[in-house]
Length: 545
Image (cartoon, rainbow, N blue to C red; front, side):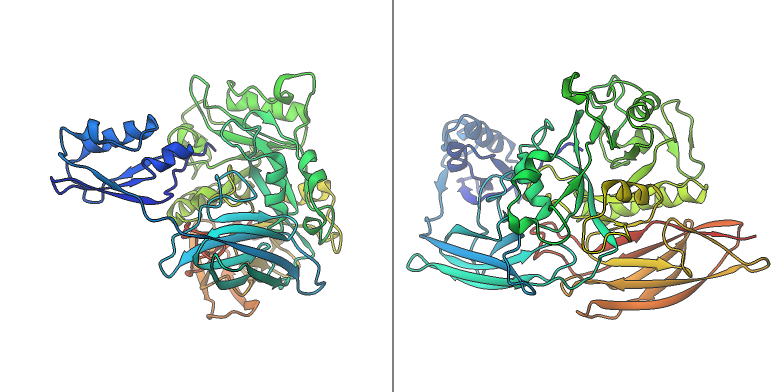
């Protein structure tokens, strides 16, 4: 998906004799520093002329909008906040079990009147607004004097370390953080199947920084899905420091991939990830499928390159013209369309896209589409992916897809094992909770055949989560119908709920999907996103004889 998010660096107060109040983000100083200016009118008054004048002044690199705003304001006073003295924060993050340094994501927020820091541009791992990727497990930050809340995390299977610190110019502030793996997910591989870096036209994240951002939050398998360019992470994996290679292997496994992006077509139809996809060094950009072609032709070219390629429909309802379901006019209750542009032969659907971490209504919208398609008997795999184009506010690995790889144990699963299990639907998507559904020995992607004459299946629901992840409820869907809920008691224990739920089969075939939700924000780890925990399983299929 295409990325563009404005950020508010700091605020200048502009007052005029006409009593208008405009808040201009980084009007003059940010322009001189090459930062983006953003204007907000909190009073919603008739101040468009002054706003336009301020924007023009910022674009021209001038800090004084008085000449252009003179028609509406006789006087404009621009007052910058006084500069704060600088101090230093030195930190180290260690694995509590081994005492070795471990790679981590660091989030820094100002508290008690201290403004949020600006650690650097959004695409830099060594400092991006309020985030930093510490691939070596240690580092030094320069911060304005003040009080901060600092959080260190290594992904969903680990505890977090949060501290209130005071930074002064007189002395260095030092933190040694210890985190531990609290969830044993040895039979699962943590995946992000939609990620961007500098080979995409709308990302400036280097390959080295992108791989570091994934490994630092515990992602073990990823697909470099660049826009109409076949992606490659070999440079980034080679550069990973030892602290980012801890755990089960070399730090990050990957296969070459591409996001076929049809924005420049006569009729843009959507975005499609294809993986694995073999790069052709003789062709421009590695020879991706023709992004000007129809979906049918794109899918044909993808499979001509790799016969069993996974074709994933990305953000299927995203506006304005990149949502395949919306553009192709599909009726998800019949898996058909009056438009010849709809081709149903894709493999997977990105149900949970990271741009909607804080917009649960959009996730639920695509979830309804997916459940409707499953009710037709279509076996599309549901995935959850970050779609990260930046380092700040688009965190790699949030959300992610866990794929069942029971042979993994203490070593990383081979990529062919991950892909084979994903194609079979042995997976769940999450931004926090670990959600498992089984019936007997069967799990997501498997089929349970009821005994002849029987119409009831017993489904076991298990929820586990790190102490910092809230889970309140589990919902069980039979096709599109909510048939049961399981309350999850408040807790910071890893084991949250283990319950058995009877499900009646009223047709010959059903898709059973579980959804877990939490109400408390993940804000310590994901600054400013207002993201709440969410997880879903792929379907457990129930067949009545």
